[in-house]
Length: 440
Image 1 (tube, rainbow, N blue to C red):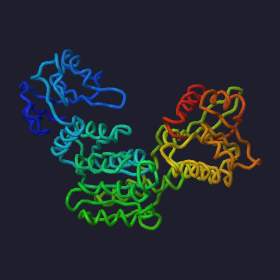
Image 2: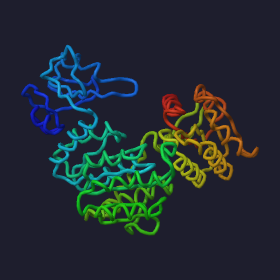
Image 3: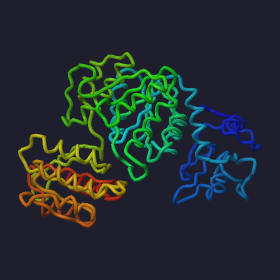
Image 4: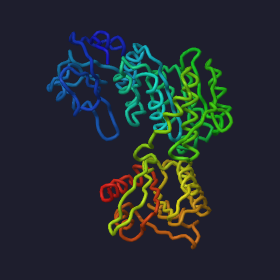
């Protein structure tokens, strides 16, 4: 980040602390990453409290610590005391963002936002230097971290924002203050935290609340509650750009993966390119070389232990129902002369809708061209109950031993296998890691 004095920091975060006169050019919230001269942000997490490490990081050479109470035993003149360190971190990120001279693109959505963010970065790189959110650093800590580390030499900054509750996007976008705000789609993800589905759409639409005056709102016109999103964008003075099956830049697209969701991602990207006045044809040609991300649809050709090979589709990052249905239908519709295998883990954060959504996925698989179905975790019993006897099916209580079963008892030469499930609930990503390790 740009160098900033301790006095200015106190002004930004509204702290009356009297601190030593130093300049800061790096901020961290992980005590293990602190270097000499850094500002350490002490954050209370669910499992850990950064305040417990303040004395240690100051002894190691951090210049200052941002805290919500004075830490006894640590130099008071090196502590900036605020009411809420996370919100203060966001204010510092917002200040650093205000110094950035390039265009800022903010995006959110229920599914595929990280992939879309990477595609935007990939496409914009043809027209200038691009800075973007690292991985999925898209929450109340990740966004300030991203803004504090923004590359001031870049022409474009692409900032991803995620949420699981009302008001979270509103906070994040107030720091990002984008020139362009994008909503990729609206699905009933995190539904257990909302009164109804419409509440999720309203929460996504918060991204327009801090859009720069006269800024551009890019909306998927085919998604749920698209008219509501457009109304909220207009209320905030945005210029509307829509993309979908009907409305998108007419240009030849030759994508590596022909799944419908990949075309929506591309239409979103090209609509942005067009709105920025850049060459859509150049961007479309470049998108033909975009590869899916690990855990988000990346494909691998892997060897089997006794000879032969199979294709692995690693979609193990997210188990959101709509994304799962799209992945299954994409596999089902794809031309392949070998067997189609799906390994599906539980879908999380569905509240009272969980049983119905798992049954729905089972019905989709039942009517697909998938040959072998493997359900992982107890919730997937409801999915498997929908599968007809004409398809081979298996159940695993957990991911333990699944890689050995696939390699030694299930997969055949020329099979294609899709692995998808909620990352932290089903842990199927660990299965893909083992398959990659053993099959490359």
